[in-house]
Length: 284
Image (cartoon, rainbow, N blue to C red):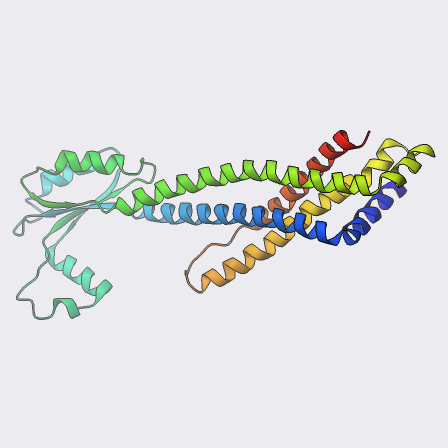
């Protein structure tokens, strides 16, 4: 226990003695962790928005203007039998007009000679379906139906969001790998300098019989501190960025606490790994 307390004390004192090198090391790793956290936050928000959009994905089959529900009975039955279709609802022209007014107001409709909205069949799809594929299949199957005047499948935004989500997920994984190497190299060089500066005292400790673990522990704790402090600073910076962003983008999801804790842990792990590498290479 005394050896651990000594190692922690030496690690903290070393941070203060070499403040400039410490600042550069922590600042570099913090920037890397902030970028990683930003990728994670963007990915989580995209996936959340995509999930919300998928819950509302629906197709609208606009019918000929004089079509009635009786005319569309056969088409409704066929749509209801399709795999992945959760509900099929006939929307009268008057109901479509009322829905438009409820959402956008009646200013745009003033002065029009009649009801511009045709009757339609609204099809809600299951969330378990692959985004886009089911819509394309249904569109291809029913586009040429004589009763269908026009078909609306507003899923282009969903396509783009799904693609962007995958891209940011790959970027997050890629940056995580880059971070692993860069943080390890930074900590390795920082600890190497610390070993060089304390070469005389290390030699004396070895001569008087200090164990290998007693000599190495302070450097390991120093590397862990570098990484953990970087993770903590990244947490604060990301929190500040998120709070500021919510004034511009409403409904923005913040990083879960577990992700922030993982940033700190990642920093500490990378720091410890860099210390171990430096000790193996530069301290015999």
